[in-house]
Image 1 (cartoon, helix red, strand yellow):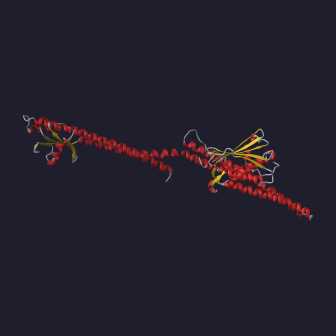
Image 2 (cartoon, rainbow, N blue to C red):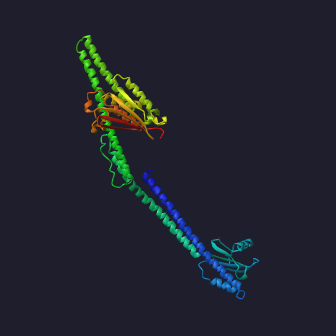
Image 3 (cartoon, rainbow, N blue to C red):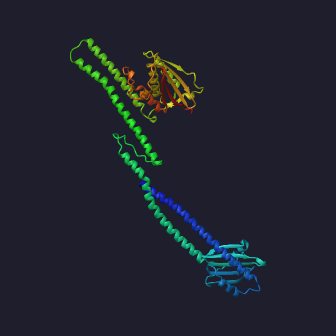
Length: 458
């Protein structure tokens, strides 16, 4: 079933229920009003009859019957009866002799207790009235068929049913065209999306001018397309740079092998060529390992092993590893502002990936520090854990700060240094994978990297 048909049926169902409730209420009120009106008319007739019967000097059944027959009220098949205190019938009048209303003794006794009873029998409205004025004890029965009232209800029912049927038909037709107009922006958005491909990510969906849900949907899709375009561009740059980084040592290895095979050489020359090839192979092996780490950090939290991780333990482990390195790098840890509760230093994450991310930043700080030392501080707030890594060296230009996280990007001053330009990009990807963020501030000979992660005690 199409969405258009579903909306039409839903709209029509709502109209159906509203109209059914409204028309049922109208008919019920009209029927109740008719009953109250005829009840009052019959009650007045019963009281009038009781007044006549209570006047002994005027009591003449024939005269009263004549008066009853001439009484102009809006119903037919009129019946009037009167019973005395011993439940004996003392008066009776019928428009139609064949249409007789008979009461049983127990019914008459009930009327004496209730004062008045209104009921219906064979479509006739009946009032049973206990007349007690002037010391009398009479039960008056006044009945009749409400011609005008039933005719009015019948006409009202016909009008309501006709209006109800017409309303449902109109609702179906209106709902069908209304749903088409309602879904028109969706069709337009779908057409725009169909024109977008990996080769045409610059096209965007027309958001229109109305600040409605369709505008919000179009803007959200445009934001998604912006992220996809950025992702494709980043992926393209990454592939191009990775291909270049891999092809360079491979080309060097291939050229050295070609040169060595052109003629016979001395053992020393072969050893020198083999040493150079070995260095290129180590470089290629390191690059491959780094690319694998980068690929692992490109997953989602659901695809990696998550468990509680102590951040201070990771920092101690990294400090120990860096101090054992042959580069002469060192770290200075500042744990003076740690909380009393160890739980505030625990996050849910992957220990090895976090170790790689933090180590890359600290190693990078040592590498570009004038004294080859990184100052690492650990803070724990109510909901966050902050790791501050500071080094003293050349400032990073403000217009280059965001670029240092791009894969394979290196500052102009670092072109000749070893490395692939993946360390910071890998670190930020891992931190973001854990729901954190990295900020950088550089100036006055100091560069500070700040890592913010959410702890489990929040």
